[in-house]
Image (cartoon, rainbow, N blue to C red; front, side, top):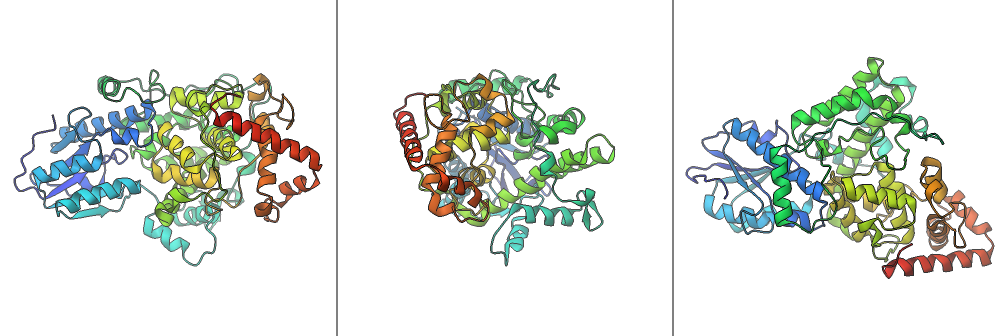
Length: 522
């Protein structure tokens, strides 16, 4: 049952959401344990409005329960609704029921990372006529007001310019007014692949096997949410701030030096490679992004990691992570409605079972279902690219990404999928669509070596579906991109293609769509 808390003289009810678990949560700084209470809730809707990977739900619930126990240990009153201990299906329903009983003078919450959640909280408080105060979230490097100020007067918003501004403002990897190393971006040095011999012996990331609290979460999920997709047998994500710091130390010591070179590389049956595995800890507020950035910069200053690796890592956090959050709130809920390319295909069944002969998708989706994880190139240039070339409805691929990845919170997932991955936002986030043939995947991985399809072929039984759909994509969107300054060269190849060959590609692409829409396999 929920904690027994007397409503007498309750001043503030502080809502702590599952992705706001920082030990230095600003709502805790001025709390009076005799008059202020914490409120947390596990509700089934948070795992079902987009079908949540069982490891994702386990991560959130375990981290929440650990946080609540730590706060209780500090003497703070925590009102906690556990899964299965109450009938309310949504966060708003659960809050509404407790507001009616507790009647606090005020409710406080950090800015939620999803518009839907804020709407629920606002409605529950309005029903009880209790004020809701939304606090700024200091867990990010750039405030929402700071991002709005940066956007003023700009005709186009581009991450690279945002990133440079923040590097200079925050003094990260700077030599006075100039970037360390004489250039802002070392992306050209960070596109290495493993070659035929593969990655060799890789440093295994530090794992955090389930403790008693996590095991209890797994049991509760099995009982109350038995139909969630994915597996959690190998769950080993950090669920406390202490574990998050240990995960950071492990990455800095063992994988950061090679991260830059191989951050875009992929390899069969190797889900982690040199990646940090810190996005879950960052997105649940278990560790602050400045802590992560400072540790990486210090590794370079100590001569432990090359500048290109550190800059590439910093750019992902200070650049993309902060930038997409700003864009999410800048454009608001309009993200959900955008479909600039008119995509209308259903999400193929293979995204739920990895049952396909295409080895790149079999690998990327297979490891996603197993771990709830795939690194950024697998998401952008395998699962995302295929959905874009196929023409999957943006809302469907968005829901898949939001539910299936352990680190997914809508503020970071939605702009990345609708914008960068699918170009459904008409270029608000990225200046061009990220499209390529199967040759890109062949260059960056060994997937194609184990695949029945040939990435060089667009027609015939051995044609790579990525390559067929790529040329069809260029043809279908010729009017939009043929004169685009960053894509014109790609589209010129379509102009030169033999009309009969192009028609054959269109026909084969149509057959691929028909096959997948019917639920059949490729």
